[in-house]
Every structure is written in C-alpha cells, then in structure tokens.
Amino acid sequence: MVCPGHPVPRQSMSRLDLEELAEIELQRDEEEATALGAVRRTPVAPMAGPDPALSMNHPFYDVARHGILQVAGEDRLGRRVVTFSCCRMPPSHELNHRRLLEYLKYTLDQYVESDYTIVYFHYGLNSQNKPSLGWFQSAYKEFDRRHRKNLKALYVVHPTNFIRVLWNILRPLISHKFGKKVTYFNYLSELREHLKDDQLIVPPEVLRHDEELRNLHTGRLPPPTKTPPPRPPLPTQQFGVSLKYLKDKNQGELIPPVLRFTVTYLREKGLRTEGLFRKSASVQTIREIQRLYNQGKPVNFDDYGDIHIPAVILKTFLRELPQPLLTFEAYEQILGITSVESSLRVTCCRQILQRLPEHNYAVLRYLMGFLHEVSRESIFNKMNSSNLACVFGLNLIWPSQGASSLSALVPLNLFTELLIEYYEKVFRSQDTHGEPGASGAARDGHARDRAAAGPARPPVPPRPLPVAGRPL
Image 1 (tube, rainbow, N blue to C red):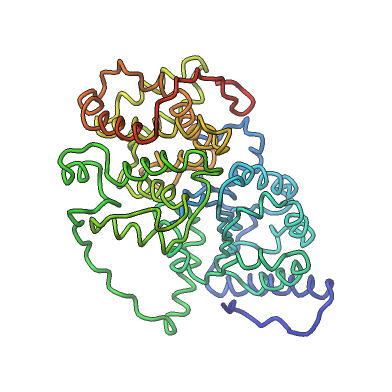
Image 2 (image 1 turned 135 degrees about the horizontal axis):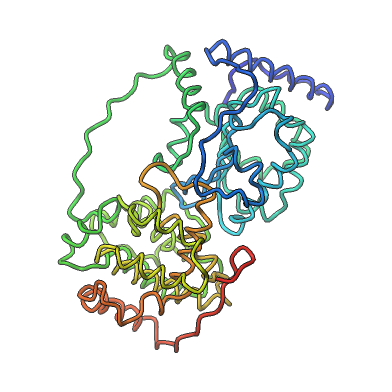
C-alpha cells in the first residue's frame, strides 16, 4: 500500500534526519487535512461522550475519560479488538503520555493471554498532541513477549507519510515477524472487511475524514456497487438466525444443532486442551464450516485436525445471533452487578436470568453447564472461570446500539464468571423457570452429551473468586 502524500527519500538517513523529516511530514498532514476542509480548532480533543460505566475511582480515570482506547467487540475470527483513536488525544500539556502508556499496558494485560487485534486510527495526530518519538520507542520496548505473541493483527487506518517515517525510526527494534502483522488501510471500507460493522467503534471525526478522502478521490474510485436485497435464510441455516428460527426448523429442539455438535465434540476431545477458546483459526476454514452447516451438510471436525476450530465455531455461532443470548434488555441490569454486595451476587444473577425468555434460558443453561466442566479441568487447560468469562463475556451480551465500552467489561465479565463458577447455584434443579424446556429436549440432550463424555464427576464446592482485589 502506498500512503498518500510525499514519498520518503530512499537514501540512508540518520536518526536526527528522520526525526526532522517526521516533524515535516506531520506538518504536511495538518496542511492536507486543512485543505480537505477539516477545521483545526484550538487543541481541545473532542470527548467520546460520558461513559456512565466509567467510575472516577478507575485507576486510570485521568486518561480513560478521554476515550482514546476502546474495546470494540471481536473481529471475524473471534479475536478481541482494541481501538486507539488519535483524534481523542488532548494537547500534550493536558495528557501525561507516560500515564497513557501505562493505561495501554493495563488494558492489553486483560487480553494478552488470548489472541487480540489492535486498530489504530491515525487521523487526528498533530504537532500539538503528538507524543515524542522517544515515547514511541519506549512504548514498543515495554511491550514484552506476552503482548506481542498473541497480537495477531495491527491495523493502521488512514496512514500518512509520518507513519512511514516513524516505521523507519523504529525499524531497528521491530522484528520481521511482528512487521508482518501490520496492515494499512486507506479507507474504512477496507477495514470493515476484517471486522464486524456493528461492533466497530469509529469516532465521528474519523468517519468525516474518511468521507472527505473518498470525495477527494472520487474520480479514481470504482463506482459503488448496488447492495442486493437480503435473501431469506435457508431452511437449514445455522448462523445469523434467531433461536426461534432454529427451534422451528429443528422439530422444536431447544438446543441449536451447531451448539450441540460443537459442545459434544469439545467435551469428548478438548476438555484438557491448553488454551481452549483462546486461539483463533483460519478464516477460510471457519467460513467453509459455516457454509456446510448452513447448507445442512455434515461436518466432521476430525478432518481438520485442530481442536480450536470447533471452539471458534461455537463462539462464532453466539456472536452472530441477531440478538445476544442474554438479550438486549438484560444489558443494563448486568452492568449493575458490581454494585451488588458480594454475598448477594449469585442471587442477583438468578433474578436477572429469571426474566429471560424460556428458550434463551435453556440454551444458556446448556452452555454454562459445559463451560463449568471446562473450568473444572483448568489444571490442564489453564481456562478457569475467570479466563472463560473474558473470552465469552462479549459473546453473550452486547448493547443494542454500538459496542460495549471498555469500562463495561468488568461487570460483563464478572457476571459471566459468576454463571460459570456457581453454575449449580445459579441454575439449580429446583428452578421453575423454563422447566418444560429444561426437562424436555434440552435436559435429555444434555444427558446424552454427558454420557458421551464418560461418567459424571461429583460436584466441586464453589470457591471464592478474586475480582479486582476483592472477593465476590
């Protein structure tokens, strides 16, 4: 990809020369933005809007309040996405860049045990809010192997020649392997081919800049293609359709076939796989399996030779439901779980679940029963209830508009952790909610799956769970 602007000289340059060139390129970026019609006001970064879930007690409230970092759901491979928006950065004298780096590490530390993706929105970086070039070097050095290993993609959106100069400055530090993870996108439409539109958090300033760039290059862009009308789902469709549709097309079976098949396979062959649900898989393979399921054709996971593939399929199924399994209505209630006294949280979970539709409750109970089994094998698979909650939290619940904010992750993950860790208490057998479903196809199917996995183990008493230094 060729960045817009002036070409970087090819001859060898010293570090001081490159730093001077970087400053020149940044000034050119500002001039070009002005030419596009962007008004450069007195350097006050636009706020992302008040986040009701962000507490002033947050350890990095001074940085987090600007909305520079956001967690934007997951990409098409089930990898958590973190966005960094330069347009949210205030002038340098209003932001401690050392604190920004610490906050970035604090955020990524929540995800480095699993595969993740970073989206860097370059638009908005200017001479007044730019960190020093030494800061960029320090930032790369301070991210150790834990951070780099599971970073699977770094997407740079709207790059300029400043990015290319910066890359030359950092080149002695950056390994070839890490460099292959970096992808440049001139337009948001290119980025959206890799990410889910409804979960991608894009600042309005970036959207306007993208539109201005497209208008500028209209003569060189292919004409927009006409979007075909949506086609009705196939009778055998498994992904992207409602639980009710699946139930109606599967003779009233409450547990969707793709969910039952993947759970059965993982219970039989994957319970002790280290890092289960943390790893991603080839997007081509996942799409092929989705196509087979949607066409009603059999899928044999043994043919693929990778236990992580059915794990990704399970997460993909949940993520592509038209409405989250925990429903949009429960979102605000779940956010309040952190304000509930520790001893009452399990009861609070039960009360929230009692309001779920019967079908959702039955599917959730089936899934949480399996994840509870996975957590009991954590000595082998390294996936305790807390780790599983970090993976599944945003696959079970998301807001009806936009994506969950970074500060919402704590209550969402905590709620999910409670469902997994205290499964027997939350879904105890004397529940009256959804008994027809629980005692019918769902319960019978669960018994069949458990039989396939071998004799049942005696229940393990729940243990206290630490969250942010406090017991649940």
